[in-house]
Image (cartoon, rainbow, N blue to C red; front, side, top):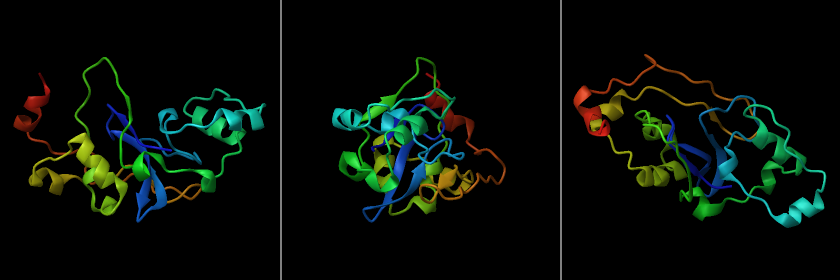
Length: 171
């Protein structure tokens, strides 16, 4: 698995790695998924497909990833962390519409010491200090595959971003 960059609110879908070990998932939608990641964050070999000829991807909204990984018999311990320990964004999902200003969730202290700090640099997420102090939105975070998720919490549900800060993104 490897990180995928997005033009969405959370900007990433990736395993969270701390001290070289998998510690959870960072994604815009954790829900009850065993693998809360986007299709662009993983790959598997043709050899594995030959070993599992009945593998399939049943369509169920937002569960396609879950379906193909389960049908391939993938277990959390089978996951290989690619892209230099999930520190490089090698694939992007884009849209042909103007994106909304991203949240600054990656700046939260809970991600200190993880691969998200390295990925943050690639996303150019460097808001002014006063905005960092106002970032109170916490994305859904799973601390490991198959555990109970931590539900989103928000002090006021939004970030208080001054008008002059967003003006540069409106061109």
